[in-house]
Each structure stands twice: as C-alpha cells, then as structure tokens.
Image 1 (cartoon, rainbow, N blue to C red):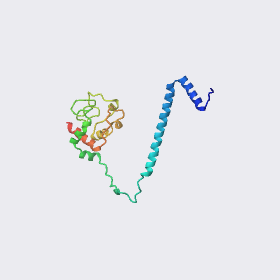
Image 2: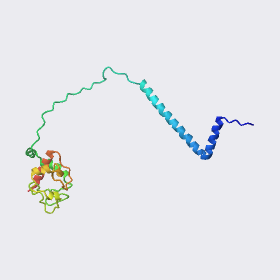
Image 3: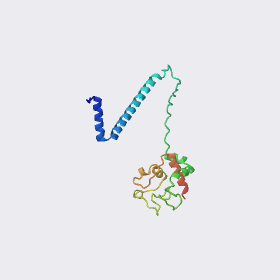
Image 4: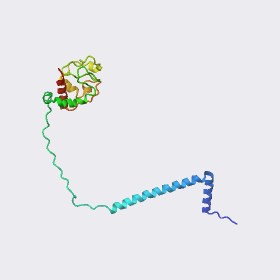
Length: 194
C-alpha cells in the first residue's frame, strides 16, 4: 500500500511532532488563547459597528430654535469699591462678645487667665504690656528678640499673619484674615485686663 503525503497530513504530522516535544497542554493553552483573542476582537468590532450604526440611525433632528431660552442677565455695573476701614474705625466697631467667639481658635495654645500659660503665654492683660513680659514663659528666639509693647495696632498686625510679622516665631497659627475678627479679638483681650 502506498502512502500519500498530502499537505493536511503533513500539517497534522507537524502538530503531532510539536505536541510530542512540548506536550499537549501547551498546544491547548495556545489554541485557547488564540480563541479568546479572536472572540475579544470580534466582540470589540461588533460593539464599534453597532455603536456607529446606532449613531447614524438615532441622530436627533436639528431644531430651528432652542426648546428653551436661557436669559442672560446683564452684568451689574460694579459699584464703587468700599473703602477699607482704618484701624481706628474697625476698633470703634469692635465687639468683645464676637471676639470671644473668634478667640476659641486661639484656646488650644493660649489661656486668658492671669498667670496660666499653655503652649503659648497667657494673654491676660496682653494689650499694652511689653512683648515678652510673662516671666515664667520660655519665648522663642525670634519673639525674645522683639522689642516694644503689644499695642492694639501691633496685635492687629501680628494676628493677621504671625509668621510674616515675626519670622522664626514658634507660633504655628496661620492668622485671622478677616480684619473685623482681629479687631473683635483685640476688644475681647482688652476687656480682660486690669
């Protein structure tokens, strides 16, 4: 009997030889991966085609005029900017009760009782006293080098941005940005002193 060697037989023989060397599991894994790759590519292609076809079929018609009209308000002409109040005017409007509420931000580091220090020195009677007058408190080098008194205006500037006014201070408070809050706190602190 004569054996015919067709291309199909040759291919089958090549697969058997390869499977014999590498194992049938390798061949199955390769075939499964190829099938998965083909199925994924086909699904992606089908999704894109259906999406495009749906976009052409379900395109909404163009309207001659909008379904609803958005009325744009004319921008108001800006009034003259309010003039910034002076320190004296702010202090004249200062409210000690409002300052006590704002001072709650300071209570984590400062006390208002006479002779009671915390992380920061006692602020009892601070308005008008020398800068580093609390004897039993250890001031930072930057604060110890500061001269003068805690006037209301100096406190006003200091509590706006402590690290800018006294670079190197140990005070980590970012500051009170609202000028009226600062004036209110000063009025509160001033009401505590003798």
